[in-house]
Image 1 (cartoon, one colour):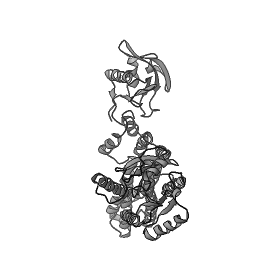
Image 2 (cartoon, helix red, strand yellow):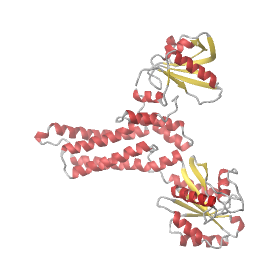
Image 3 (cartoon, helix red, strand yellow):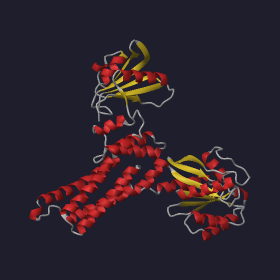
Image 4 (cartoon, helix red, strand yellow):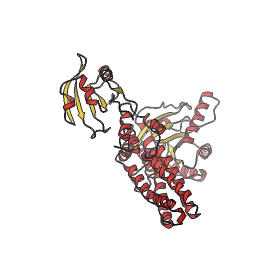
Length: 461
């Protein structure tokens, strides 16, 4: 990490009431002081705000408020300054140009957070949670990211590594006394530790499905034959006319995707083309895209119209679409057009013909009948993903992969102990497990990984 003083906008591009530019580095006070007409910032106390003007030589650029933060009690642990200016993009650009003319350079994406990591203020998992918090779009993802920022995952991983490190130290000690054939590490205790580690790692791995759901949303495909009411249901769930509704079969020829939040969780609703055989080339492409979306979805809401007299095509379609991890909800639609005596008869037909567990619900999107019950089913699906009472949730794919490697190493350690292999090989497997766990917090990493992680950040963060 070089010692350059860096600067960047900390607020989003565009016109706003106020814009903020951040400056961080050893010479932050000195550089800003050169262009600030007001209090001498090099003599200002930490965590104070000062009124004045930013100038380019003798020309005043803007009337500003400047906040001063002394190292190490700053985000980067370096001397830091924040310049609050009138939120004109032109003014912000001029201030940045003036800072760079006087010795600062424009920060790279994520460089402020990277400096916080390099200087030990936060670990790598916490650094990644900063980006997750910025990009959180719902209450559940915000809570998960904030928990990680407070050290939730780091504390969990640190505890796992600490227990393993103690045994690794004893095994390494045995290597120093290999000629004397002594054992400092109790193998039975090591097996017990490994089994405990496996249990904890598996719990973290199992939380990834839930973590991925709250971060990226659950894919919910709405499918069925043409005119089954798919677009009407989408519009009713979203409470807006998002899709064209028509009595003409084949109106929807492409997929339409929208986000619906239920209980703080995001659901990616996908309205698809009616599933049927067709000679229309464009509609046929839409039908194939619909099938592809269903194959990738985590939830399938299949609509069957109550006025149908033959559901054999529906049974065949559903059985061709289902897959192992799919949540299936069969909705009997347009129930406002039929007497209730027929509903149970249709449900029994589906129960006897669909070879897969599913929930059955009777709705009328037009009259908003049982729509809340459908939302409750979707919400309960996400709630059931939670693994126990553990608040630590894995939302990051890099963490998931590191935990998978850690679990493989843990299993190898247990096999090594059971097979009584050499101490050298056992020590190797223990060190490998420690490294994989350390990848999450950044105790074991490399510049390529760091560059990839921080390149996805905002420039001013």
